[in-house]
Image (cartoon, rainbow, N blue to C red; front, side):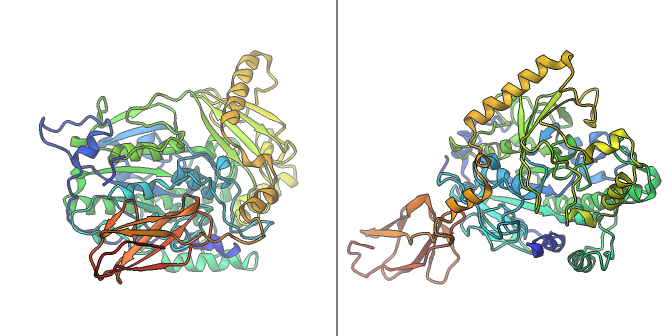
Amino acid sequence: MSAAGTLGDWHHAIISLRHARRETLISVLLALAFAFAGTHSTAAPGIPLQPPNILLLMAEDMSPRLGVFGDSTASTPNLDQLGREGVVYTNAYTTSGVCAPSRAAHILGRHQIATGTQHMRTTRGPLGTYKSVPPAGAKAYPELLRAAGYYTYTDAKLDYQFSGTLAGSGPFTIWDDEGAGTHWRKRPEGRVFFGLVNFAVTHESGVFRPLGSWPHGPLHFFMQLVRAWMQPDVEPARRVSAHEVTLPPYYPDTPTVRADVARHYNNIGVMDQQVGEILRQLEQDGLAESTIVIWTTDHGDGLPRAKRELFDSGIHVPLIIRWPRAYLPQGVEPGTVDKRLISFVDLAPSILALAGVTVPGNMPGVNLVSGPRREYVFAARDRIDEVNDRQRAVRDKRYKYIRSWRPGQPGGHALAFRDNIDMALQLQSLYAEGKLNAVQRQWFEPPGEERLFDTWTDPHEVHDLAADKAYSGVLQRLRGALQAWLAVTPDLSEMSEAEMVARFQPQGETPVTPAPKFVLRKGRLALSAEENASIGYRIGDGEWRLYSQPLQVAPGVTLQARAVRYGWEESDSITVAVPAGRQSTSG
């Protein structure tokens, strides 16, 4: 083993139910591989550690609304306990304020603007459906874990831009198992696992009116019916009422706004109970002391002026990591708060390092275990559904700079999906009627080319300092930091989306991956593929496996193989029948 769309949106509602039961077997020894990761453990000298299981729990559409992050309104006892047992990271930021670009950056460990995954989303937009084609060297980090011997699984939510929204629509080589009902208990005996579990209950659609708003939108109505049918029968530990919520200054204080924010809190409470059940299953299966648990969200709140934006309300996310005692990195103590800057592109190299897997050189993120501290994090906003835009942001621990290429495009524009939220429609009506104050009107007004915010004195980012001469030095520094980042980070939005898609589909069609080739010599079978495609194989009618090195095959065996480059169609399968005489052959 190596040591080294319209219909798209209602799919969110179907993902809620899947955290079914788990099995009790601990992973095989890959001890020396873990030692190469540079992680210092408290295990007794001379006792080799096997790599840890890693469980990534990712809620949708949620800012740091937890008690352990200082939110006294939230009802999140399970996550608060996880935070007390682990490390709470208070300065984590996604690369986008909306799911598909953020999830693409996470899974590839690369900023979405560099991989053609920046527009929300590729399955729906003015150009129709297409799949992004990341650079040939880009690999999803769960595939790298799989190549190193990990059993990898996820549920029904993919949404990588080089996939569709749901399981079964992306490269078949990334996961051992994907879709409803996946679980660590389904892994083969003795395998370490990496699992990614998503929680749809906190998705923006959960703030929609529970029974829909027919006839405002049939999609919305249908989505809410599906959501009501699929939703687990789970209650938060304590229900939050509308009068309890504290509103930011950019929201007017109305019953509608309060009701929607309270609904968001109660969805968070349900998610907390779902997380608690998974953590209890880890304990029951005897895996808590061999599993690193990471909990975070894919971007900020699924509320107007949060989701899709580059304000902290859109990109600031909670992050908790709980290490078993044997896997604690040097200098890390449970129950502590870490204020370092973290980007979503840091998750991939960090998880690979924790697993003892070599981090590819094309991942720009920082290894949280042993890497340097960041000075800046970066984020981007591009096309949002039917509305074109282009913004880039840089943030240090205190200041945020946002550069807009469409300075006349306000964030509060009409948007078909978001406008199913009652408070979004009310905000639009109040703005049209002149009933919003100056701060509340900002979201509906052109942002200008540059904005600068002091997040310490202005955490809601409502006082633009870009024209204030007292902050000219800060403005120049952050402007320079963004320019320096863009100088080394390819930005595919330098071309139009139509031009980018033409590169992905040179003849107007999605390319097909060439079939893999093979060489069989003295019982060893070597497979290869063009375009740095990934290869999967199976022996007889067995399970499909990821190919990573030549195989020792027995006489008389029949093997199938196929290849896929991310964003392309899969190749045809080839069949190799190993002759009884083991003669050399190729094809």
